[in-house]
Image 1 (cartoon, rainbow, N blue to C red):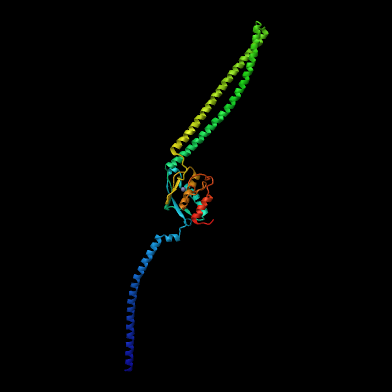
Image 2: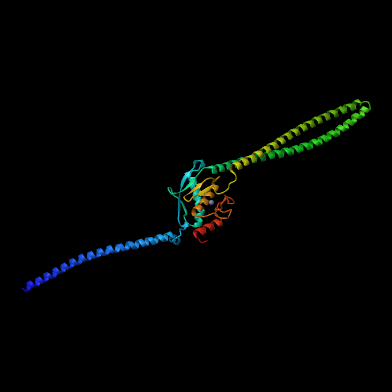
Length: 342
Ligand SMILES: [Zn+2]
């Protein structure tokens, strides 16, 4: 009986524990689920307030003020876009010039600022329109003017040597003429003398005839000289007329060009639009390189600088095309933009 009671007590005890544990698990589960649900509602309220706050901050640009984007700490990837075949440029040539155009900025900024990457969104285009037509016309004009100038120089040289010869001939002629006149005077005097005497003795007559023949010969020679001098004078006049025609042609060419195209030197050879660089005109590699460096400068965010020798000057003016480089004002503009120390 005592053993039975012991077992019964144990049974009740174990049963009570089991029941109690089951209940507490269920209760805790129910409670924790409820709590979880409740705090979820709270969290989403907090989140929307936080989002609203962030939205306000962004609207006030606080975020951008705190973290300004340094244009010299990012690489601009570019690709070739439309290359008008009328430029007669191949892609390799353009890419090698673009690489050269990157260098001055990258050297100064000490960063890989530009890089060619096929498929990049930022495009470099070569657009052929009136601007390049004008540049080509100017190139032609330049060649024509050079040809005319050397033609004119040749005419001037001709004129000089012919004129020298002319002066020599005239001087010689005058000397000869003076001699002839003196001889003729002497001869006439003798003839007059013997005429007054009623005739010359045979010996004297022979002498006079000889002198007469000599004078005739000299006269003919003088006539030849005159012909030669006049011929030369004609040639000289022809040279002068030719030179005048060349000068007129030269002026006409310049005038025609000016009427058609005017004088434009602005940097509209290229343009940075914000998403691409368009090239419109250039007359040689150096000219194109200067334009590419200038437009790359705008791509970085640089504005024009007040220095006629600078790459970032608004005109193509006093920049040295034989040695294109950033001037101190270009470098300062980059340092200011990129917060670089000197
Ligand atoms: Zn510009």
